Image 1 (cartoon, rainbow, N blue to C red):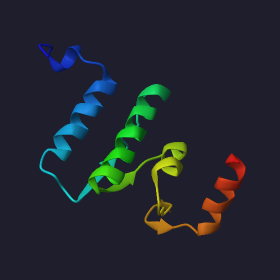
Image 2: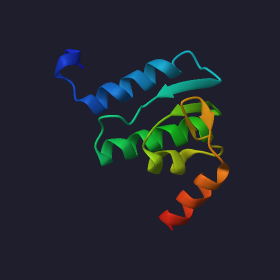
Image 3: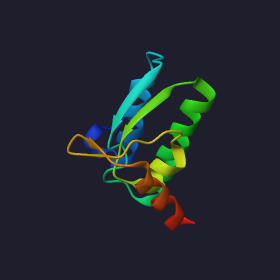
Length: 100
């Protein structure tokens, strides 16, 4: 690749950052808003990468994200917080019911 970072798409830059994070073979990675600014196909690519990292490499992913569709597709456990307070699990159950 012979491009400058400013010449790369935002989605590709996000994937490069994920690659940089996994190079040291961590057990856990924190991602803060990884889908922010991505279109639906780029978000799907991030989803696939996260699933691969978790299932094939055993990397735990701690995710801070507002894209609830992404969160629901890749998460085993979810805690919903606002201003440092946890919301009841009932909110998550309601969200899941709405999406069915």
